Image (cartoon, rainbow, N blue to C red; front, side, top):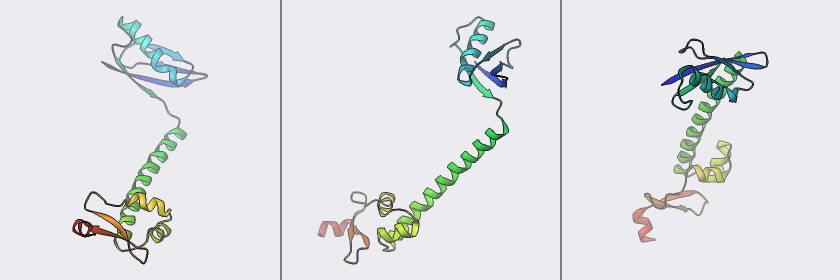
Length: 147
């Protein structure tokens, strides 16, 4: 069984309630203590082992916290999107013959990072070579065998 544990700040304490069980109330000094206090209160009320059920702690969040969490979530999504676009662009630039230095300058990242994002393909289809003009290229498997 899983019980919802709601908690809200009340002065210097967290006031704890369990909506599924009438009469279960407790309090904790810190948020990290809420689960233990709730387990103890539920176990006492139901006369069961405190570890025989699951709890889902749901603190009441101030508006500032809600905004911060939404902003951090949006930031993570934007970073993932930027990472995917950068990998795609780095690979496309190298495939078009740009040097890793030029690709890095265009993308605003180091040449080493370009090399990490668009690794050489020694075992999966070919190996990298550098032309006399410094541009990265890709030898196909049959060219590798002849070289």
